[in-house]
Image (spheres, rainbow, N blue to C red):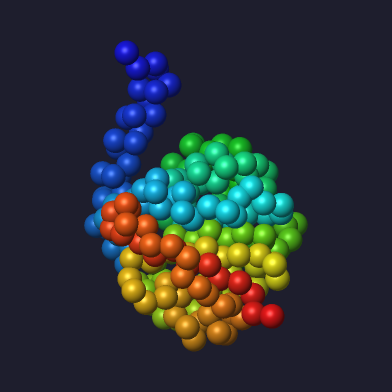
Length: 201
C-alpha cells in the first residue's frame, strides 16, 4: 500500500500531463509542446553542471520537472530563482516550491529582476523556452537578457526538439554566446537535443 506522501506524489504526476496539455491548447507557441519534459531530459539538462557555486536561474519552469531535479542534485533553494511568464504555472510553482524565489514576468526583464533582488550574475541558467516558436523580436530580447545575466564562466543550458540550434545563431552572436550540442535524449517524448551556451571569450 502506498504511503500518503507517495499517493499524493503519484496523483500529482498523473495530473501534470493533462494540466500541461490544457496550457498548450490555450497558448501553443508560448508553451511549445503538448507534453511536459520528462525525467530523462531533466537529468541530461543538469548532468555535470550541478551542484554549482553561485546563482542558478531556471527560465520557463512550467510544471517544475527541472526544478525538482536541480534541488535533488544539491542546488539550495536560496540559490535558485524561477522565472515564469504564465500566471497559472507560477501559482502552481509557488505551492510546490515555497522556499524558492519566483519572479513572475517576462524573461526579457531578467536583469531588472536580479537587480530588484540584489542578485549577481548567474553561474547557471536552465531554460525551457521554445525560442523557435517565440516571435523573433521577443526571442532576441530574452536571449540578450540571458547573455547579460550570465557570468563569464557560466553556462546556459537549453533544449530543443529540432535539428536546428535552439537559439537562432544571430541572437547567440548578439548576446555573445557560443553554443554546442551536448546530448540527444531519445528517451524523452518527443526526443530532444540538449545544448550548452557559454560567453564568447
